[in-house]
Amino acid sequence: MQTELQAYLDRIGYRGPVEPTLQCLAGIHRSHALTIPYENLDIQFEIPIDHAIDRIFDKLVTRKRGGWCYEMNGLLGWALQEIGFDVLRAPGGIHRRECGDPVWNNHLVLLIKLDRFYIADLGLGDGMREPLPLQPGTYRQSELDFRVEALEDDTWRIFNHSFGYPTDYDLRIEPADEARLNAYASELQTSPASVFVETLDCELMKENSIACLTGRVLRNKTRSGTQRRLLTSPQDMHDVLRCVFGIEGVDIEPIWPKICARHAHLFGAGALQDAGD
Image (cartoon, rainbow, N blue to C red):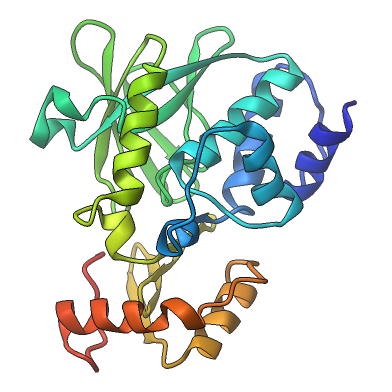
């Protein structure tokens, strides 16, 4: 087995069979989902993010960081192809139900062809723990229910679990427009209006819950409710990044004033609130 692939499997703690089967696909997807956090720290530091797999591998595997949609699904898709899976990088459209077709390619989805297509997607932060069959129906993963709905012209709508965000997105069975993916990625990491630019975000899925760091607010979300804690200092955030998300070596001090200013603008300086319920 290639050294890089083994390093990835070690990073996510996967010890199952390594072959293009549904068992392997489900095991790798789940292991990655519960190990590597979704995060936008580089965007907060204005560090450009491209789609080069060498850079993504170094960041998420070697340096044990996390990433956003294009990095998380980019790494997963690379690993699955190395194993021998038939992987289609497909266009996704988050908020297409509200915003229409212009949002196509603002999200990258993976379609894995086995006996049928399976949706593999680690790019939401809080979404499916295992792949979903591309077939209409409701699918339970532990305590969480996901729904797949067929629309028109090879277009499908995926509904997240009851407290997940975003609530749904669309995908098409066709190759993603890589130029459009790049354009969206550039806009989302540079536009002042982008939520990725505005607010620090770090998330790590658990079996039936999600740990979310949104600006200064650490949340643990479950079906029964949300627990919140307001972080009070850069050291407090360093400790949370290390202990909750497994991220080390990121100095929050330079961006702490921006984080505090954003929180105060939205909620008031001392408010223990956030916009993400």
